[in-house]
Image (cartoon, rainbow, N blue to C red; front, side, top):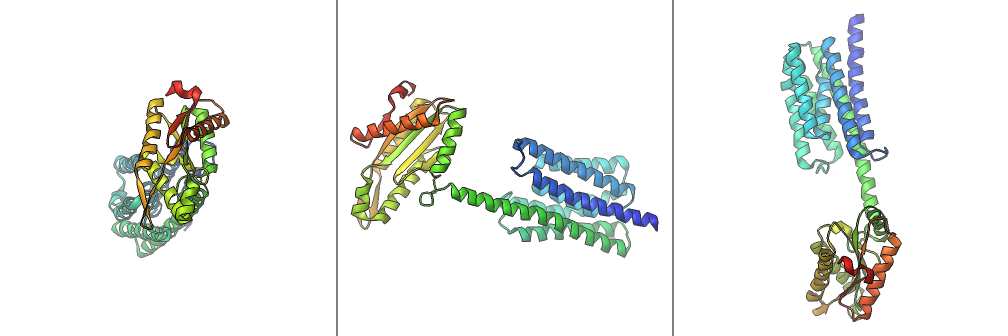
Length: 359
């Protein structure tokens, strides 16, 4: 009786260890720790594999049905960790079974249904699943429970063991997956609203606050080209065609930026009709060519608004910031060049005087 009680306690511990591993994985994968993401990722993988090994040892030594915690870990590894870690976990399981000549060989077949569901869910969209997290939690728990039933039935266990293991598997996997998916949904929602707070809702480009943050970081760490782009005579567009036409014109400029830039995430709307573009890892000639392409494409395109053709042009001020320059100084240079472009008659690109040698 005491031995049976100890087995149940150890089994409960193995299940608890599985849930605690997932909680640790959730915490390790967040951005609140002051370490780089690769380090967090390695720590997460090691923790999962270590918990997997401990569960194997507990269930094997004491002859406890292993489907519950092992099914949980298999789902966890396949759903939330990279394929190399999943492969290493499976190889470790196979090696363990072969080297110890363990009778749990049937466990490999028992886990297949659960792995199939987990793999299918991962293929649906990796971190952007097209199913809601409650549905995914239910699918994982159901598949793991099925694996538990198959494993314990094939092992010739009694009805009590089959039922108990199935219930424990369902509870453990549901609890762990519920915790992870709920936390992930909350993180995704927070990330969505953070992104919204940094995005211009009309053009979908980043806004001025994101621009000021990015220019400070980028100039501190690398050479950059900075363009300030201003729509020419934009007040006349609003006065002649209406503010709705002005919105269409601004959206058109943003679409040109998206089409001309290799990294459109470095394009920003920083004022009413003023835009900014930060270009990294290019020569001065290449950055100048990009600016000319943007100017030319806007000039040669036309918008039809209320059966009238609207032609637009932009003036562009361009400068080059060197690594370690003051972001405020780089902004001042680009702004000065933009005013020079306006003074030259608009619809042109002007390079800051001291930066001409870099072009």
